[in-house]
Image 1 (cartoon, rainbow, N blue to C red):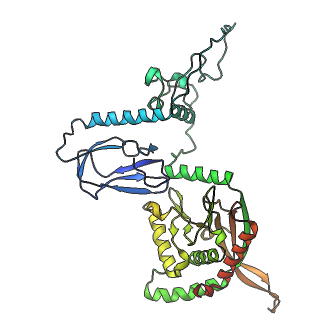
Image 2: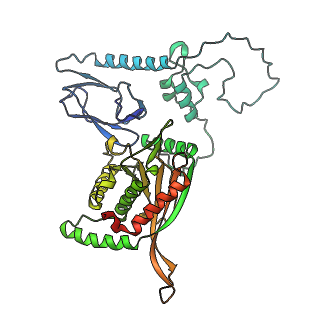
Image 3: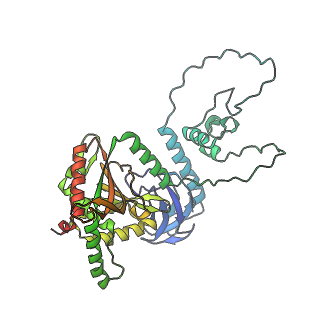
Length: 419
């Protein structure tokens, strides 16, 4: 299993594009690998033959470095490919066990004899062993715990009867005794956890637990942005009917400009140092069928609205198709999460570490505000509510407030983008 990104520790086999015994040339796509964020094509580096597939289509949780196939050269004898594959798997399994060698065993002390029960008793937890110690690998214990499988009922096939991963995965519980009551059809659906969903869950949980979040909210008057957007779109559609600026394009540009004014917010906590970035690489949250992903508009501050719009549309399409490359979603310096198109007025977002900030954008709503200059004493303005989530280790409250003020100023006077 190749490492498709520096942070990848395991992956899945989405689909093999070549069959066993089929020849391939340099540059041919051998298979699709499912990482925690996308499905990536793996191309052949040399000419050869796919002699044996070890990890089949749909395999999940394959550790980086574990053999997934045997490749051969033209003219090689393929009759021993199956045996060679078995040997490669056993060697990788042995290597994994040696990395986690058990602690030296302590001299066993005889347990005092247990009194025999005087009468029949009902064991409320039959899955708990009451006799000899059960020897099982850590991964076997983990899988058994997750699936609720009693280790005492599994016969180990490892050394000295040790229970290994394959024993747990192949375990089939004894059929339940027949009952006179018919079980009702389940009124729920269990969906297997994908690599992407598992990673989202673990990273956001870690972020919420470890990062000292705080939140700042402001209202932004969007009337000038909406009018300017209307004027620009009239001009753009005359040349290309599909070219239209969105409100989010203005937001991306305003975020980049504000980060230039307040660079402390364009930073990352790296443990021993706080890194402040010179360019604004803006991660834009995109909802996909398999989960949330954040493709990056690189150096957004140096780009015009039309370029930002085109790049954002292209990245969003690749994200929904699962075709993003790691470089297109790793390494952003600031994230925008916009739920305004869903009618959400206000929400708070979870920081994407090691970034320091994420901006939650709500819907633009017509709102009545006092206007002494008006005859009626009030007027209707278009207001958008945004909330900045910041990591207090890197961005103090006053810095977050200065950044929000700069962001608000750019959107309420969008012609400053052109200066």
